[in-house]
Length: 250
Image: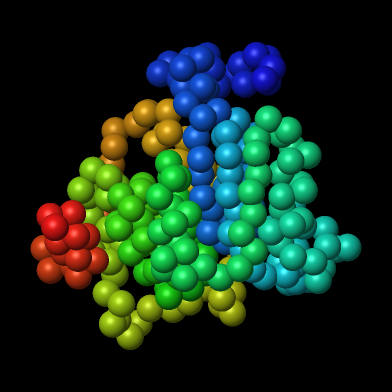
């Protein structure tokens, strides 16, 4: 590993050689190599993550190209996981890229999340998000979650390893007003902005920087170029948290 390559971040206060070494030893699992996943994966890999596991079972579609710049027109029809792995390896040979090109069951998610240091949920539907959350709570794995639709985006960090609130504490699976991002319009730079923010939050967790704000939902209005922050708490009636607590007590 070249000392020059990462010199600009190694010189940061609180980072140093020890922080870079933590990144080099880290394992991150990324769900969804789309509009959020592509920029998140790109900056994690170029920052020096040791191992990145990319989970996506879709093929590249022409409509992906404006928002997912790792893919090129001649990639249309190819498996996203294979293409993104090739591109990321070319960006940084120091990083090990693993791929999972199938839809994982909840048991499968837990199996993969257990050895991970952080999980990034870059999916585009609520069913996946709730499943990823349950697996993260069960394995006590930090979760960085992002979403973008039309001109609005959301970002949150969940720390089940620190007994913080989970995604289910924030959103009710029975809600009737939850929209999936798939099939909805979205402006291309917005997903890039949120994907980069997700990479930043992941690096902060791995290196041990920041204030540890894992009870905040940040909402971005692209038209106003403004962020709003909402605080939320662990729901004492959350079935996901209660199930995980019961399992730990047995």
